[in-house]
Length: 190
Image (cartoon, rainbow, N blue to C red):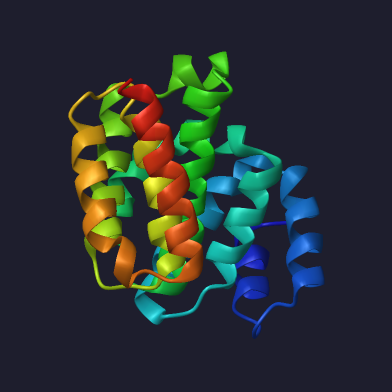
């Protein structure tokens, strides 16, 4: 598949789940197209569409390591995203990255992700967490921030404060994740 074929596929109407899965299987065989796919995410963010972001999220679920060569591009672009349909999958990718780095302690991620990358994820996740948007990006962000707070000690107190203030106004899913996160934070401070 070429970059142009990828672009055409992503702009040929709403993709079904099975079409996304098929596209991901093709992209797994061509890791060099991962960056082109992410550039399509950035274009779609301006258009308000989300085939590329949905596909990117599913590709990262299977091959998160494909993100590493473009980590600077990815982290520099996060704060520019405006379309919630694009933000949600990118927030999920941030959660997967922080889990690989902190929870799984994957050496490939630890060696290839700089503090600068983590700081940009952190800043953006705080922005998403406090912004007036749907809950899914907020849920992914609070998990990312929990892990990032293991490295940056000022994060946990801020995260705790935000979650305590926003808990009552959140959806059931938000409240569930917030409670789990607050419980984890409480265990760390014992």
